[in-house]
Length: 397
Ligand code: PLP
Image (cartoon, rainbow, N blue to C red; front, top):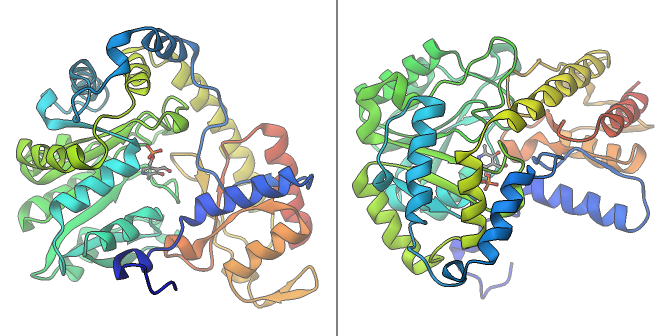
């Protein structure tokens, strides 16, 4: 490590999901036919009415200058209306803070709530950025392991067993990245009640709210447990729902004093989010959900196909996820066995062999706090999906 770096930044590793997709892109650029299952992003283009709104914003001189750090007032209002429409959570615009994506919203929230030494409960497998962001705020990450056998669900009993006098917050996400797990309304209620009773804050990530399948339903914690509202922060954004990962617009919804504190932080950090992207996000959250329904049907078809193909591979346990666009197969039974003539002893090594031999890029479970697993995003074209999983199966047979 370069001695010039601060200890704070020195301890942070690159996002493994971004690193894998960058590697896959590099190999493709070098003419190698790599199929990338790494990136957690829709393969669709952003719907046309949203792109048109951005074009119009480019022509509006008012959008060429600084605007309020907390977001365009009309966007904050629209996010409040959209939240009531989609999850039933009634909030006022002053609870809303517009950010450079959900990732930035989460960073702000940890900075605003977590002091050095505070403990933050993070159910594992977890999305890669939660622990790093908690650590950047000086917090201590307490991972709570869950397994494929329990559907990757944490229980109030497990939360209570991990609680100490330093426990500040729980990070909750349903539908989940990386597992696709969707908690039932009763499970959400039980976790919300535990938090309300114990005084632990909940940072709840709703970014995959519209991507639920079969009889799974999305449930918002502060709607299910009203008593939690004074200690709950909702994080959301347009990236996954509207195929807008590149536009970088997300938001947090928090008690007014927390939002005001985040506003002060953001005023020194980023100022306003790009106005053109904010106008696009406005068109997205105010517009119809028809495009989203179409994308969901496509993901659903791919979800079944990838699950079916993985389930046929010997020694791989692949639960059928209820939401998001990931599968998270458990490959522990494939370890310490020959793969392409080599013995692999970790999911990290397995992914390296699959990249080399099958030319497919998967993300090893290590980055998600779940060694022995791999994550695949099925947000890629049907033919690629089919070809990629067939190549994996051929190497693992
Ligand atoms: N939360 C989860 C669980 C995610 O999977 C992602 C993106 O992968 C984000 C938040 C951040 O999304 P963005 O910053 O693109 O809005």
